[in-house]
Image (cartoon, rainbow, N blue to C red):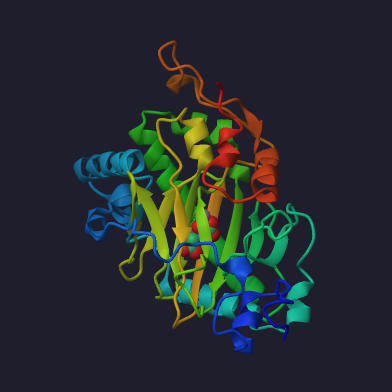
Length: 351
Ligand code: OGA
Ligand code: NI
């Protein structure tokens, strides 16, 4: 293993962490000031909204419309909420985490089959965010797999494909139910939105994130503050916390209740609602003791849709804030550049 002076980025953080060769983080990863005052507000955590999906889909009309309003408020005020009673079996969620662990445990050469290619490749393994353009390294390995409209999967480890197929189908259903509720909360017609965003051919990507223990977690980041590209992102994790969400000027450290999904709004929710709903900034912090794993599923318009603010939310008092863009092009831009706050979205802002 190279010494710090001759440090070159590793194939994976897992390899770096497993080697045990570092008692401090290599300078590439030291992107935080450990003496900066904390920007996390611990009192906000209990205010995170909770959405009961079973009420949203099967509740009696009065409870249902109350839940729709709650969902609308959660999107407007937070851009982030916890979803319970989502109907995805715990066995499917556990199997997905185990399959992802199985993938990260493969030999580096086997994983490398999916690395170092174009950002639009349907299966992509790597470390940090985009090592080609970043001058900072993030303490994270990832596997990104496009699962819809066309389903892809790495062939290894054995059984991965079946588990991913099931997980993708289940989370897509949850995503669509939430989208339906959100359209309703904004008084947008569901059929119209399905057409405008071509949701039958929705783009869906499942991202497995691995955050190995870090010798100096106060200096490095798992993922920097960023927004996601899609409409919604659903996330679940292996029981180790690390997701933080921005609310107002503060950050909230999220401790998800058991059997829940954490859901955040993405850039395309902001574009299509003409800024009525905003994509939320979030980041991932790491720790010195345990490996954290998360599965983030992005649900988005179909790759060929040109997404623009819907006419119903554009008026002379509130002109269109974003110009339309083909989803595929946005994705390529967002994935091909540095991950920095909402810089990808800023590019579409009408001045
Ligand atoms: C992501 C992401 C956060 C986490 O994959 O886009 O924000 O907690 N992940 O892993
Ligand atoms: Ni994200």
